[in-house]
Length: 129
Image (cartoon, rainbow, N blue to C red; front, side, top):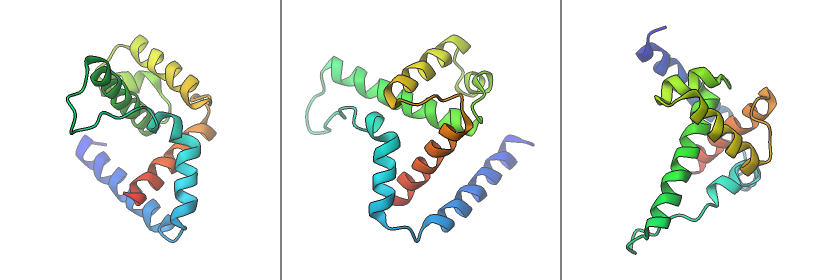
């Protein structure tokens, strides 16, 4: 499948999932997102009104990298080589980030069950925003 066609298929699937879950109470979706993504999302964000310190900028960049890595890993069905290729990073860098995410989230990212839970959390997060 070509990248554009693949992206369109992913978009259609996401819309289908969103329609399926749009009737769930927001409190339930929020609780689910907090349960599975809370530790990652709770990393201290940099306030736009303040001039961020170097440490704060690094923490923000790291948080964004980890979120993107996690979303890409889910899109790649947990395949680390595909993740590395899509993100244009070395396989060892991808493995390091996955290990860091596993520790932060407290779940094994090599298990389909974990990836499904996280996929649902991202869908709920999108529905809430």
